[in-house]
Image (cartoon, rainbow, N blue to C red):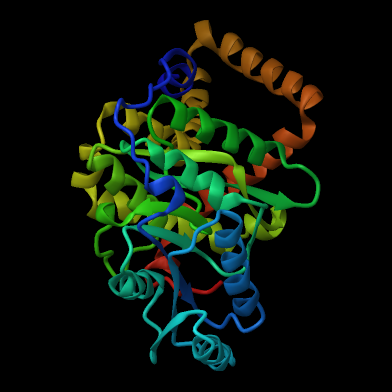
Length: 342
């Protein structure tokens, strides 16, 4: 319960006394970086969308850097045309090496102190970039992420996750960032391992390690596919493999973020795996303990029934997610080599 209690009991972090008057308007410039693989249907629209966002935010000093990561579907011709029009800086990696490598390459070309990181497929709400940048007046804010919304009927589980992330950012830093759209100070980035799976999560942890905060801006909305497509088995497997990779290979980074953020990391990312297993273990033990058996199963059954009557869609989505994530643990060997497919 430390996670949920902390989100409600901990005081909101107050803004620092310092003022950064240049970053909110990107007066010293901003570099948009995009890793692209076989996005011929979307890449041109994305470039023009980012240009429109910069214009709406009245940003005059910017660049858009697109790295094609082994694309072979016609994306490279589109990118070359955009580069010929001086709309983008275009770099080609002939053999696909993954998103982290492409981002490293793009950032190495960036000349401005602020970075806007974007994926290709999703669309943004009006003035999303303006709202993200507005928080950088506080020099203790290292990165600001957008809020993810899914198309179709409102998802109660997605709404809950967004609410938890927003509370996290108010109490300190939100865990992870929406890789489809976030801004970050270039000085807080590092070269990513090329085999890294969850690049946006590691970026956020690096910001926290530096003593800076990661905020979520709910007015900057990223629109993505519907719930069923977004929470596909492939994506859940990738997330599961990424979280295991984080524990195996980045323990020092996890330790460096402090106890509060460690609890937030657990609650946001790992609790969905651990809690169901602990509940199953508790249920097995309770079967052999007369003095707790009725209390355990009675209370659990009553709570589940009440929630099912009150929020049936939420319970349905939650059960599907939990069971799917647990199933991915049994298939982790399939994700030793992650293929960076859209």
